[in-house]
Amino acid sequence: MVTHHPSAAISCTEVAPYAAQVSQVTVGDSRYTYSESAMLGLKKLHISAQLMEVFLEIARNNTNKDLETCGVLGASLTNETFYATTLIIPKQESTSSSCQALHEEDIFNIQNDRSLLPVGWIHTHPSQSCFMSSIDLHTQYPYQVMVPEAIAIVMAPTDKTRNYGIFRLTDPSGMNVLKECEEKGFHPHQESSDGRPLYEQCSHVYINPNLRFEIFDLR
Image (cartoon, rainbow, N blue to C red; front, top):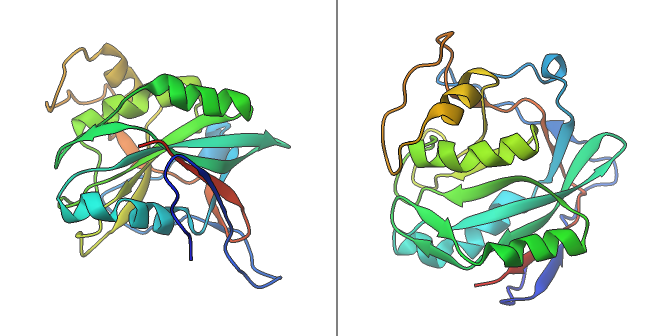
């Protein structure tokens, strides 16, 4: 059980058998393609087995009001592997289909103090299915420019077929489309030049049952 203290750090770890194994995220779904992480030269990214569950609990009040919640993932880099050790819940403005982080300097301060790299973000779709909207794609783009391994986790508790997804923009296909797009709000994107989807399910992410992480709730 995790006790939630606003504006404080919460240290949490999953109680797992000593021999528990780190497992690669593999979600069989024909709607999404899988990146060949080795071919792209992507480093492995480990996330805690508890991270998504804990985030859903933090977001519960907003979810019950049909409001999105977002958080930012910070990671350390050890032996060419990223370990997501920090979840930051910033001050934010939310609707049923969008979430905007406020006072981003507070996020940067936590990351800088702990020498963390921004390896992506997590947010809820409280009443929608599990997918990346046009706004989500634009949010993901700068993360992936900074850190190619950066991910976007979508939590969709009401989606009966798929309640979460771990995505990234296809590279270079989706990245090139987003680089050239200057539209705001919800809008259709043009197809990529090679016909590939604009985003895909990640294949470089691993669930680590023994990874400890901190939560900073700044709301």
